[in-house]
Image 1: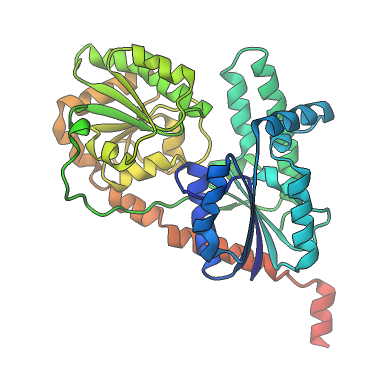
Image 2: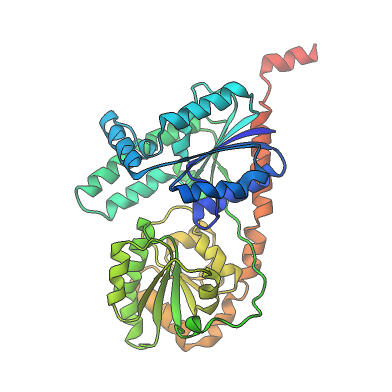
Length: 408
């Protein structure tokens, strides 16, 4: 197949959720088909990472977005009554590149990663379209609105409404639409929308560690770990919830326990948490795996969550016990007390963590995490399904008239 791949962020390095998924999709398709990649970067340094993708693509176009351009695009979308997300990712220069690519070549399929990139396609499209929503972003914005105060709650609610209509519109146009979980698929329903396909994320099983942990990691133990991009609102809200509502309950009985927050670009709200006893905010670290290996438990205290949390899969892949709120657990079909521990509220969350600290034998219940992800979250299996969806879209189902003519 000849594939035009449009992505809202360059899929390299694969160091955060959406980029991990996009990279694996590109890697799988690029080694089997001819792929032209057009995408955005958030900085010139990030744009330079395209060199690592040269072997996977016939052609790559990367455009760097400035904060000024993002803000101006959002303002224009607000004025026009459009989703702000589309304005943030709109560029007339990028639009010209897409049109040039479509004029120069005939693609078997156009693969859209993230709904914001669908705006670049002509209507009707010259080639079949497969749209990977990843998550249903309108539902996420609705959660933002519920957890915010005016005027942000009003703005977020507006975005949820506008984006929901935009998502439904493109779901009707696309030959196939994809999300990461069944829960996400249930959100995208309506007249004229074909059944949504589920292609979940995968995870790579790391090799067993033979080298000792660095001294700076051992000095932190015991600790509960949270890993993520720390200027992302769901992550910010999650660590605030744990640090303010859960950790103090645990430290009443176990003052030795620390809460280590690992991830780039910690927002001011996250940095403020360092004032609380036992909270460590690292910012960017050279090797996240060291922190994961040394953790007593991985926590996923999400109150805002859509789709699959890769941090859960990564923790399971190294056999770490996990305590999570219900949403992320449901997304990976994890069973309470078998795969992970699920806590409905801060009190239950603290009780579960205290039990892990005081009853080490509980750890053996979570030793099957590696087998769980190996069986259910194998990248090769998931991407084989994706490839079949693209192949099916690239070979349209014949009309009844065509079938009749072929029989004559």
